[in-house]
Amino acid sequence: MQRKSFEGSRCPVARSLERVGEWWNILILRDAFYGMTRFDEFQKSLDIAPNMLTRRLNGLVESGLMERRQYSERPPRFEYVLTDIGRDFKPVMTAFMTWGNKHFAPEGIAVMLTDASTGERVSPVLVDEASGKKINARDYIMAAGPAASEAIRKRIAFAAEKRAAPDKKPDFPPEGGDAPQA
Image 1 (cartoon, helix red, strand yellow):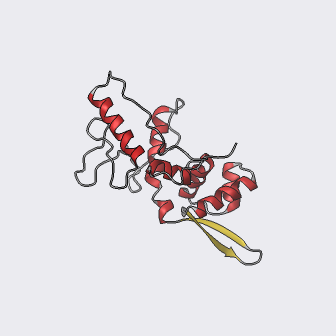
Image 2 (spheres, rainbow, N blue to C red):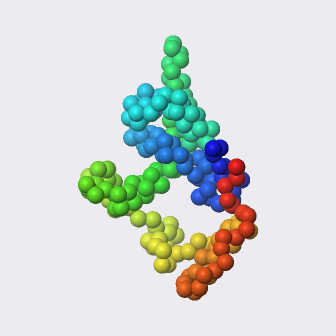
Image 3 (spheres, rainbow, N blue to C red):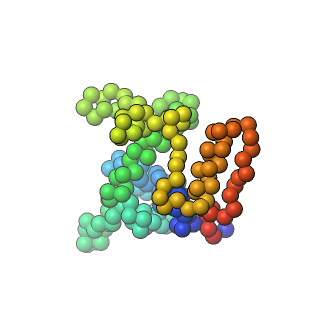
């Protein structure tokens, strides 16, 4: 079965998944945040087949999340370093870790975020930069942006209808739009 592509979607979630949605990619990025840069480091950490790791690293380079740099001429050897785009994924990774700790760690927390200077555990939350208010489902909603497609506008309208009349069944899904393309 051929993989579906979100490349033409206007949805920022779908476009982001186009670049990091494959689970190996996220694990490679996780290891890059731990400081791994070399092929053998990623392979040993992930226990991944070399051909699969090569494909994933090439995809992360093509997507602009990592940069391939030569560190040895004889023999030619390369390392994979996070770019600014890749480093900007760290808050997403932190949120993912926090969510996993909360819902999928029955044995207890294996990795947690701590303050680098004090060592105290940190409980990350998403906040509005302008107001400093914690973002929660009750006080914040998704809204269509200036470049929103008709499908995104319909999805936003669907959500508004559900909030206004939770017991009424609005007409959804909209025809066409931001579904993955073959």
